[in-house]
Structure formats: C-alpha cells, structure tokens
Image (tube, rainbow over all chains, first blue to last red; front, top):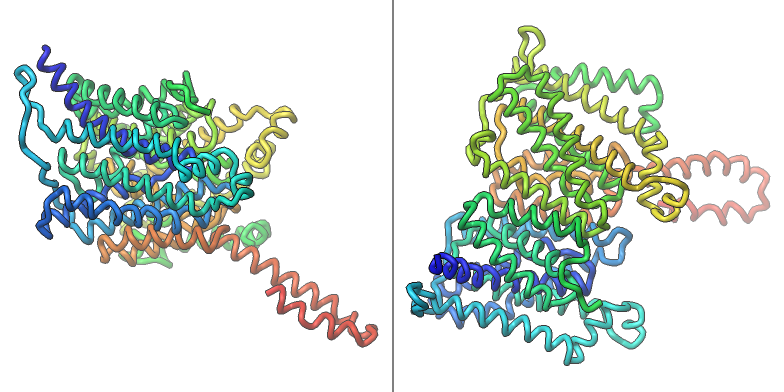
Length: 289
Length: 347
C-alpha cells in the first residue's frame, strides 16, 4: 500500500510540475490581458519539438538544447502576441476574438508540426537515467529535477513580479491600463513580454512533458485543458494558488488514473472542475486581488 | 441583402425551386460536398444563435452536434430504432446537452463560459472513450442505416434524397431563426448581449432566456449531427475533435456573426475551400488556421458585413444620383462641383 501511495505521489510530482509551468504562464496572460491563450498547448508542442530537434537530430546534449530553445520560444511567444492578440485586444468582444484567433493558431501549429516533424511518437532523452531508492521504490532523478526546475521558475517569476520594474509595470497594466499608459508604460510591450515569459515557461513544461511521455502533433491540447482546470481550481489571481492547484490536480490525476483507469481520470477531473465552478466561481484559493 | 430578397414572395418561390432542383444542379462526387456544406451551414447557423446573437462565448456547440450524432448511431444501430425516431431523439438529447452545458455557466461570465463550454466538449470526448460498450469507444459505431421514406432510401442515387431533405431543412432553419430573432425572445437575447444591466432592469430573466437559447440551438445541432451521422453512416470521436470546433468557428467568423445567413454563407465557402484542400494534407489545417486569423484581422464583420456595406453604399449612391438630377437643374453653379467628389469618397 505504501508503495502504491508513493508511486502515485511521484507521478503527482511530475504531473504537478508540468501543470504548474503551463498554468502559471496561462495565469500570467490571463491576469494581465484578461484573455485565455488556446495556443498555449501549441507553444508546449513547439518547445518540445525544438528541444527534440536540437538534441536528437543535431546531437546536442539535452540541457544545451533546452538553453537554446528558451530564446527561440520567447521570440515565438512574442510573435504569437503580435499576430493573434494585438489586432483584437482593443476591439469590442476582444476576449472572444482572441480565443478564436489563438485556437486558429493552435490548429495551424498542429498542421505545421505534422508537416515538419511527422505523426510519429517522439521522446526526448531524459537528462540522466540515475535513480534514487526511496524505500522499495526507485525514484528517477529527473523527477526531482523537474520539481526543482518548476519551483525555481514559478517562485522566481513571483519574485520578479514583486521586485523588478518590469514586474511593477505588469502589475500596473493589470490593475489600470489607462493610468499605466499615463505614467509612460507601453501596454503593447508589456503584453508581448508577458507572452514571451509564458512561452518560456511552456518550453520548460515541454522539457518535463517530452522526457516523461511521447509527443505527437495532436498532444498539445490535453495538458492545456488540465492546466485550465488548475487555473480555476487555484484561482487565476495568484501564482501561489496556481502552484498549489497544480500539485493538487496532479495528485488527483494520478490517483484517479490508478484507481479508475486512464479513460475515467479526465472525466473525474472535469467533473470536479464543474463542481468547483458551481460552488466557488472565484477559485478555491483566494487571490491577491 | 438576402433578408430583403427572401421577404419578397417571388424569392421564396425561387428558394424552393433551388432546393427542388439541387439534385439536378449537383451531380456525382460533388453531391457529397454539397451535402457537407448544407450540414455545416445548419451547424454554423444554429451555433450563431448563442455565439453571435446571444453574445455568449459558447464553444460547446460541437458537443451538442456530436451528442445528436451519437444518439442517432446508438439508437438506430444498437437499439434498432426507426432512424426517423432517432432523429427526434437526437433533437431531445441535443437540447438536454444544451441545458446541461449551460448549467455550470449560470454564475459565470465571459471567458469562464468559453472555457467551461470547451471542457464540455472534452468531457463528451472522454465519456465516449470511457464507455466502449455503448459508443464503440475509439472504433466508433458504423453501419448506421440511411433514412428512408417507405421503401425508398434517401441515400439512393448518391444521396439525392439527402440533398432534398437537407436543402429543405436549411430553408426551414432560416425561416425558424428569422422568426426567433424577430420575436420578443430573440430581441431579448440581443438586449441581454448589448446591455445586460438595462435588459435585466426592464424585467428580462437572463438565465431563462439564455438557457432557452442553449436548448433551442442545442436541439437544432442535435438534429444536424444526427443527419450528419445518418448520411456518412458512422459516428466516431472525431465528432468531438478540435478540428470540428475550429472549422465551425472559421465558418461563423468568415461568414459574419451579425446575420442569420452569414454563417450559412461562411459554411458554404469554407466547405468548398476545404474540399480543394483535402489533397494538401497537413497544409489544410495550416491554411484554415491562418486563413481564419487573416479573416478575423481584416474582415471583422465577415463576408456578410462586406456584402451589406457594399449594398448600402450602392443604394446610397443610387438615391443620391436620383435626388441629384433635379438638384443640378436649379442649382447655383456651385453645387455640382461640390457634390462631384462625394461618390468617390463613399466608395
């Protein structure tokens, strides 16, 4: 029994890391721009394929491939903001239009991935195959690495938002866009940089995702939707809430997968989501606003 | 434009004649394209009831379509129902699905609605996979019987009956939607979209009107999905796929959300284009995705908006020309030069 619980816990840590990295990017975009980025799964895919190409095709070590992929993904994130968000954000009904446009980009990226990388299963080699013995269970070192990377990046983002001038500008735009413009902040730049940061987080999520499971061009949406459940669960206003929500959903996901089977696990997660939304539409964890 | 055309009795006759002549106008392999276009036109037009006119960020419509399709497949294949009865059942389940999808969003606004309704489609997808005994799981259910009148199958002679049935259904749907949008109910939906506080203060019940819109558009989508499955003879999980959502949205936004016929026109254009793109494989998704983006950026009101603007500027020019001719006769020499550049500016 202990072994079962322990293996569920380990799987929850991996899933929780993936969901935190995705959901914190989504949360940042949501709280700053008030839109949901359906193309976030596409960013995850592009990140994973970029790392895969650099490591498997070009023969670079995975860590170096990741380091190279980060600026590439930042650029792609900013580009996404320019083509799919900027033209619509100030129109009436802009949030709906942004959702439609990012969805369109997501489906286009899926086509591009099919074209460039093909429909085969791809997997990135883990950084190390070493394991740690915890009781009778062998824990992969990469699990701990994923956990550490996640905590570093998300908590780092929280600190940056609190302490730096850029963070202050983001919070200013978030709270009052017109006043922010009045003091010389340019929202367009903030929005592009927010997308770039979210895209980098998605790139880290891609590293976790593609080393633990295989990826195909169609696999971008599944983690995105769970990340959305995390957002609702943790409340979109605070990254701490996102972090707690991500690991709770990760735990729920791995526990239901173990006891109910792979098919019923998403059903359980989504039903929980609907219940949470009915009872507490503002999320379970109170945000900073 | 089309509304004015259709309100004249002669044009109703013309529309009925076009429907009657459909099987003679489209022959052979084109029929499958025409039938798909008609089905998508019904899907897009019923979707626009909640998305465009209701202003509710409803992404679940594809789910209602799929639920209707699966109702058709399960009742007519596994339970051996008469397919016409299955069609009615699909209207019911589609409507129920609409009500169910609306319930979680009662307390929510805007973006949350978009996400929850999106999750509804995913929930359908996973439920279908999780209950292979009923739905055939990832294999789907095939061998759906065609609709028949007496002993005559509608699928005979490459779907001649389906062309008639779907053409007539689309026309009926147009009339129905026009009646709905001209009724107090339709106007209250628009009022709730444009100024919710004012509408509520005037005694409108937001939840009741919107759930009714969901049930109505859901049952239309259910019937449409049932017709789709009945024509293509198979129901599988692709009914709930992302491709369908994007395709439907591209039709609505290309056609234009402001008019009943906009999404219908969009469906026609996208289906015809899509047909040309099928050989291109992955390029198809890329072209449709980026095409939608370009349309959203450059044609915010869709084709319908462009047509209506073109027509009104044309008629404005015509009335001006009519009023200008007597004017120039008794003018004081100044006005012709004054009025000359005007038509060019309105273009």
